[in-house]
Length: 121
Image (tube, rainbow, N blue to C red; front, side, top):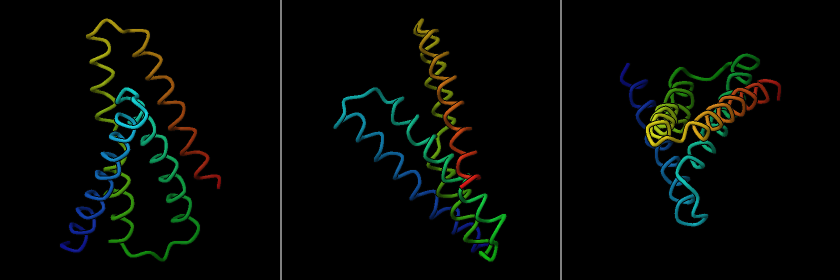
């Protein structure tokens, strides 16, 4: 139990740090709104989760702690559906309904497609 908890915690710290770094890159280097960084990490995270899922189904052999490190910790903290939800609601509250709908459709389509591509790889 303790090894699993530590694996998730370490993976989560790394995943959250990567997400933060991507968001800072998008804001400070590309001067893009925050939601572009969120979209990027969601799509990347879903693709990587698909690859991981496929690998675990076809190869196995990884320890439970390693599986938890990658899936629940690293990728769980990297992908940011909660942030996505907050940003969408804020767009709606700011009378940006078309932007919120477009963001929701693009994010959902890209993330499910990335997961599917990961599984198929």
